[in-house]
Image 1 (cartoon, one colour):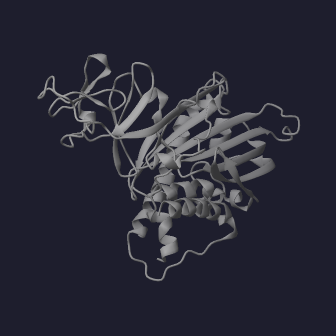
Image 2 (cartoon, rainbow, N blue to C red):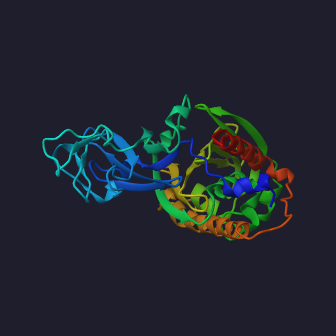
Length: 357
């Protein structure tokens, strides 16, 4: 594999916002451990409601702070020698030296956290490089007009492989031939666009169809067997792909007649160069019912049906990663016209990676 191609399956971008969890994951004064970009972290929500993050090693003897506990006053106690740290990471208690000055260097290394729209984002890289880069908005997660389900999976593969999978609209068949995919899907033309959101470059692949037959699973979730539809997959940095799909009954798009929507947030949080956590948040407008069984909520059907779709994607990602671990001599990928979105995505991510190097 050439150096240029190996970057795709071997890069780790630290200067970016990644999901540390949804807001609902962080209870007040409960220690949470994460490993993001080969960095062990401890996070917690303070009594004042702010989520803070630090290197998970005690400054004294490398004991993980996440294994500790809370004392009165919001102080976190290291489980080894009892050093206590406040919500700014400053050591405020040394049981073995009561009354003596505490070294100024006795503190936890902080990391930048930003909580918005129901998501807790963390920047594992150089805080000075954040500049004007802001995490993308995810308003549906906290909107009273939408409802969501979420799940988390551990993947044995570089997160970039999953980003490329979701940008690729032509993999629905045969990979998803038993679920949401149809043979005819691959022939649908699509557009690719690029731009900037919150100081971060994005690439989007999108396509529109009219009077098009829907797969059985999409009909179940979105209600129409023949439909006008618009769909897009948008990569915003290395940590998020937004998948947006809206259907109307055939001929109904022009008048916006009875639209039905499915909006998925796909979050990727690298653990290292070979492993990442994949968190999906599936959003639908409240009151949207199943097309097959109107007595059931469409979101409940999506929970069952998309679980199988995600398993198919995971199988493909882990198989690719297995092959990436095997020396492949003078192998070079053959890129097709349909790879335009993911190739532009690669250029964006390679640029971010080179800037760090």
